[in-house]
Length: 179
Image (cartoon, rainbow, N blue to C red):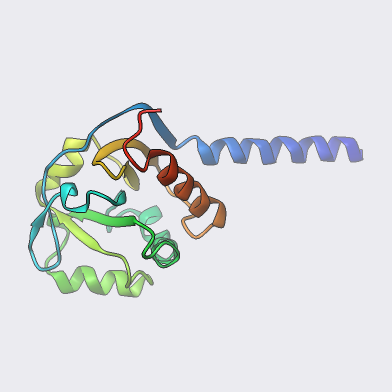
C-alpha cells in the first residue's frame, strides 16, 4: 500500500513539474525583437531598443485576464528581488483597456503591484508584431535586443527557483549568444 501511495505521489509531482515547464520555450536561435513603440505613463513612445544592455521580460497582460491579475503581486515581488541587476520587467497592456493613466495605476496598486513599470500598447501593435494573442505571455529579450524565448501562461514569479532560472538565462544569453 505504501509503495502504491509513493508511486502515485511520484507521478503527481512529476506531472506538475512537467506542466510548470511546458509553457517555457527557449529558442534554438535568437531573433530580432520588433522596434514597435510602447508608451510610458507619461505617453512617451519608447521601444525595446531603449533598454539595450538589460535583460528584458516583456509581460503582456490584460485587466480582464484572471491569471494576469492573480500574478501581479508576485511580479511586484520579482521586480523588487531583481532590482538593479540588469533585469528589466515591462508590464504591457493594450491602451484601449484604459480610460486613463490613473485607472491603470489604481488597478496595479489595488493588486499589490505598485513597483512594476507599466506601458501601454496602442492598438495591440507590439503584441501583434510579437505574435502574442493570449495572456499572460512573457517574451524574453537579451541584452542585445534579441528575443531568446517565451513563457506562456502564469508563472509563480515570487518563487526563488523562478528567480534563479531567470538569472541563469540572463547569464547564458546576456550578450546575445545563440547557444
